Image (cartoon, rainbow, N blue to C red; front, side, top):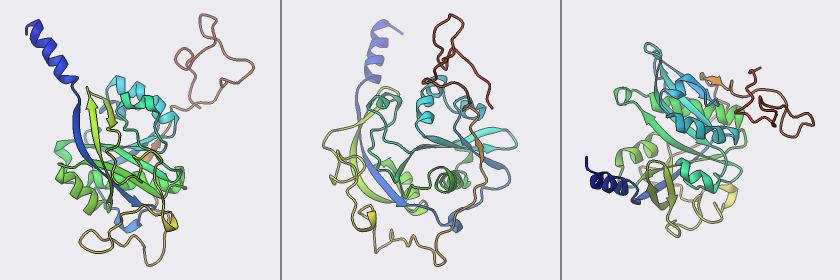
Amino acid sequence: MSLVKRVANKAKSKAPRFAKAVVLARPLPLIGEEKPPAGPDFFFKIVIDPTDPHLAQVESPERLEMSKTFFARGGVVCLGIHKPTNRTVCKFWLLAHSPLPSEKKLGIIPIRLAHDEAYLLDLWTHPDFRRQSVAFTLVYELAAYCCGERYPHIRWVYCYAHEDNEASLNLIKHVYGMYPVQTVTEVAIGDLYVDVVPGSDHPKFGPFSKKGRHSGDGFSVPGRPRTGPDARDYHHKDGWAPEPYDAVVCDDWWWSGPEWFDTDHPLDADGRPATPETLRRPSP
């Protein structure tokens, strides 16, 4: 390939790409009876560890390095594993904090989350394992763990899909029971960088607005359909009950030891104050 073509291709890959996106929401916790079984050939992992071998199967080394900040600030990822082949065939990330402006370059869109909100992103299922309830069960395993144990204060969860992706919208609305609350225009540059076009949020009270969500009575998220095919009763006749999860929790990345504010800060091999990269400590 000539130099001119290489330069032209690189310039084309860096050109901004615009897409209309729909933001959807639903209340938590989930109703226990909603969770379907994926079958005996699959198991699920809640991962808070960038060194997890199953996570490394579906993420690049660069993305694993960037995920350290994500995990350190409270994010988790749920993986679906195919037992016979020990392959990761499905993944879903959950963000429980408003991302920093610098995280746009990591592919995390700048959503503004309230204390009782979370955001689902980056759902992926291997083409050979689609339409087998793997992704469906994955989402409910993630929600059962997060609502019952890790984030008991979360009451609302968001996700978004491109407006022209009819299949994803139907899945999110009719299977996950989420409803549209806002539309935005997304701009993506290169492989990872993503942002929202200023002023494209509609209506002006939602997770992508300047001040975030403006709650009504009962701290509800506006927009819930009360009639028609998308109407849904989120209450259970017997009330809410914590849903047990079957997923294995993998958080071996966390270790005990001296922290940054300790008086006796550990030194690395060169005699300088050590960083997590220069001083490896065993997991407890």
